[in-house]
Amino acid sequence: MPTEIVIETEDRPGVLAQIGEQFGELEINIFAAAAFTHGGKGILHFVVDDADRARAALEQAGHRISTIREVLNASLDDRPGELGKFARKLADAGVNITSFYTAGSSGGDTEIILAVDNVDAARGQL
Image 1 (spheres, one colour):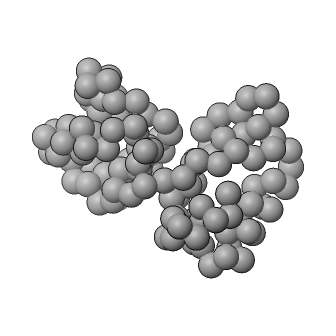
Image 2: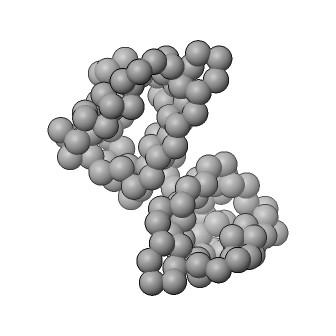
């Protein structure tokens, strides 16, 4: 099951390289990722295929994990307005999107990954 892991770390060269190398050595696949810096800190989001091994590796390297949660995959038609329609369905069902990633496009579809506050309600909208 794809899982999002969010860490807080120091903002310095090589952090992403170290994590990428570590995940590669452990054969942990990254489906999506995002990274931001603010005030001397880095906030890194990873959607991985093996949350237990990823968590252990990150903790062993001294990274502070702030969030671990199940995420959902969805496929949208690759055309203007589809994201808005899908997000509106979730909003109307009372589901809050807390993280959003695009995971690539192929054959006229765009794959997205979502972290939400109510996974069961969101699944009912897929």
